[in-house]
Each structure stands twice: as C-alpha cells, then as structure tokens.
Length: 391
Ligand code: NAD
Ligand code: IPM
Ligand code: MN
Image 1 (cartoon, rainbow, N blue to C red):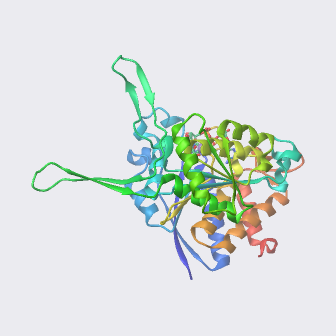
Image 2: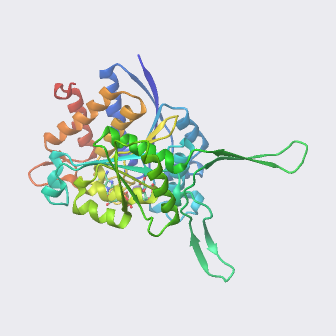
C-alpha cells in the first residue's frame, strides 16, 4: 500500500488543538483508502523556542524537507511578541516557507450554503462566493533587503523594510572558505526565472481550471515594485489568451471584496496584499476558522496550513474551529499527494457535519448545535466513517 511521510507542526496556541483533529481524520481516511501515513510531529514557533532556543530548529526543517507533505497548525503568542526579530515564532514560519521554496500560496474562500448566515455580509452578497487568492509567498516586503530596526546617525529610532520583486532570484549565497586561509570566495546562485512570472503562471493556470477570470491586485499607481509586477503579469498574459485578465489597485480591491465579492474568480497578488486580502475574504465565508491554504513550490513537499493564527484569546479552551485545518489537510491530500478521493472524503465530511447542525462558536447561529473543537472533530470523524460521505 502507498505510504506517505507527513510532517506535522502543531505550533502554538490553538495549533495543537486543530492539528490533533486533522491527524485523527487523516488516520481514519488512511484506513479507509488503504494508504499509510507516517506522521512526524516536530516543534515549531514558540514551542520550538521554548524547547530549543530557535523558532525553526534544523531538525524540523530537514524533517519537513524529507517528507511528502507538511501540515502546520499555527505559531505565535504573547509570550514571544517582544522577542528580537530572529527569535520570533513568525520568523520561523518565514524561514520554513523560504526553506521549502513554497512561493505560491493558494487561499480559497468559498461560501458554503450551510454557512451563508454566518457571513457578516447580506445573504444576497455572500451566497455563492467562490474565489481563490493566489498569494506570492517567498518575496516582497517580507523578505526584501535592506531592512532593519535600530537607531540612525541622528540618534532617531528607525524601522524600515523594502518591497522588492525582481526578474531574477538570488537562490543561494554560499561562502566558501578556502582551506588555504585565503579570502573567502562568495558564490551567488541566480535563478533566472522571475519571481513575478512564476507566480503569475500559477495564477493563470489556476484561473484556467476555474472560471477563467484573473484579477491582478497591485498598487502600480504608487509603488515601483507594483509597476514591475503589472508589466510582468501583462507579459505572461499573452501565454494565456483564454484567461480574462484585469488589474485592480489594492485599496479598491479591499472595498470591492465586501461590495460585490462575486465579481472575483482568481486573484493574484503580492505577499503582503495577499495576507491582508485573504483574511478579509475569509470573513465573507463566515469565519477565518474556515479558510485553508496550500503553499507550493516548483518541486518538493508542499506546506499546508489554515490561514488563521494561534488565536491566543481562545487557546486552551477547546473553542477553536478545526475546519480550516481539516480543509488544509484535504488540500494536502489533493495538491500535495494527488490523493483526490481521500481529499473529497474530508470535504464531504465537513459539509455533512455542517448539515447535521454542528457549529463551533465562530460560525454559530441560533438553533444549531454549539460544540467545541474536539467534539467538532469527533463529528467530522463520524461523517468520514459513515456511508453518507462514500464517494
Ligand atoms: P488570529 O488569526 O490568531 O486570530 C484572530 C481572531 O480570529 C481571534 O479573535 C481568534 O480567536 C479568531 N480565530 C482565529 N482562528 C480561529 C479558529 N480556528 N476558530 C475560531 N476563532 C479563530 O490572528 P491574531 O490574533 O492577529 O494573531 C495571533 C497570533 O498568531 C500572533 O502571534 C500572530 O503572529 C500569529 N499568526 C500566525 C499565523 C500562522 O501561524 N500562519 C497566522 C496569523 C497570525
Ligand atoms: C499568515 C500569517 C503570517 C504571514 C505571519 C504569522 C508570518 O499572517 O500565514 O497569514 O503574514 O504570512
Ligand atoms: Mn495572515
């Protein structure tokens, strides 16, 4: 039987609570589908800081690289908020994304018919929304240099970052110290594939498989990095004449998402705009606790995680919605392992559990069954087990 190694990174806050649910679901799916999962749980984020002193231990990154797919809960929390930059849980997550080279982050926002009333938007606005944010994940202001935090020559405190996208990528900076004691040689390995071209291609391919509409979101009226972004996206568009391309400034896009979200099919945007717009899009669906994501590179294991964080305000209280993580596990099966049928089982079980009226607090409405994270997980397992979700 097929066997897959899956690295689980529970992380912090509600991370371990939602990963435990997803692990049980994957285990059950495996027994039904006749496949095998070898789970490797590794420390990450604040949990890793407490255990090893760094947010992404080498063992965790190498386990992730050596596996078939990686499933992450969430990282971060008050305890580590004032750590130095390199000792923040969030820095570990960025190192993980960079280390796995997962530049394409797919964040689908789908309004399920069962959850239309959980949306903060009116029924007629929310109903039927089905969009995909394609977020560039390993470039832009998150990684751009120069960056820094400190004091300038006038004694003033400064913090600064650089939003940069290039038509090449410096992949590796290796210092080779010659054993002879000579000056170190510096090798720059340059990847000639544009950071923008490759994410644009993923977005056009995604749009092609969906409803054939792509909206590129930028700030090309102000930012040079966006001017290059728009130029490259327009260039790549010539390879996809069947996809209808439009451009929108990010401020307008934020407004259009709540005015008329159904105008969107696929959205492609940079790292930071994608971060913000996907949280906004999540609320159309009822809760950030519903949104999964897949982060993919050109090769190697994908990284799968809910888009939400560690939710310190509800952590340890069995209140977290595990569905975003379960749906991320479904994306892991589909995009990471090519196990479409197993992925559909999870998706069908989530819908069936919602049909049976179970709701965590974030998606609760009157008359339904309010449950905690664990019980929601158990109900999804029952749905997986039952004939209802047989494909
Ligand atoms: P958050 O997403 O953790 O929480 C925002 C709000 O949404 C909170 O009220 C929270 O209770 C709620 N929420 C989030 N997930 C939920 C779920 N599954 N079920 C029910 N409610 C849920 O964002 P934040 O509060 O801005 O950040 C908290 C910490 O998480 C910070 O340290 C931040 O850096 C980190 N963070 C991590 C990730 C990640 O690991 N990928 C993502 C975002 C934020
Ligand atoms: C997310 C998070 C991360 C991001 C943080 C925690 C580094 O907000 O996954 O959306 O900004 O990408
Ligand atoms: Mn985010």
